[in-house]
Length: 258
Image 1 (cartoon, one colour):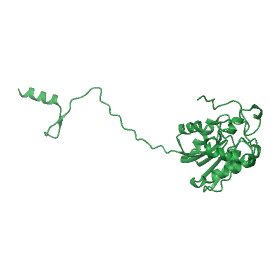
Image 2 (cartoon, one colour):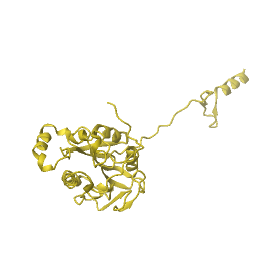
Image 3 (cartoon, one colour):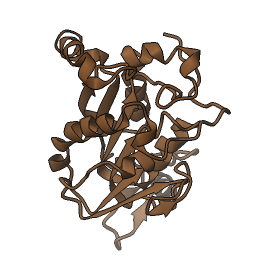
Image 4 (cartoon, helix red, strand yellow):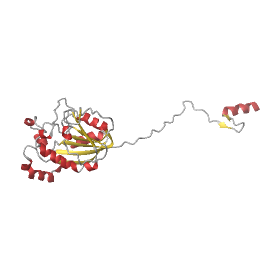
């Protein structure tokens, strides 16, 4: 399958609120419902929400006490570039990325930074846009290129799996949701969404992925035994005065006795 490069020089300003997305309030409710069953499975000391949209997600069901957010715009706890996180290495137990990869020109760098600050055994939750969905189809319409979320960059679930695998993560949960193109009010397409969810479950417009950072065991390095460049004869020990003599010594002794 042909993939367009993930890196793009064209920067798309990420949305600062769910209200800027089509059917934004309904989208936020659906995402909160989907994540509610995942939060009890995550433990630790620090939860990082990457991006403004992640900042607005309800994480009260998560047992992690210290929760804070970061984004390049005002309104979050820390204002910084999400591709250069101002946190120490292995200091975060869980990271939430809500459309953070879809509205950044270098998603690989964002994932590398998230991986850097995440502890071994920590979790990453990614919410993304599915190109193989009703939303992915209308995304191809150039007339919607200035509206959220149609102007985002769509990455398939398999492609995100590959990125996580290269960084040493194991996907432990996955879910599709929102079977709508977002062009119409949700109540008008309620029956169609139910039909698609039942018959075409993989065609949800949004997906959620939870991955765990694997702990890499330390492999002891075995010493490399090397032979001497000039092998020597094995010494032969004698009982005389506790000295050790070689074969040459015995030859000399024998010659003197003759």
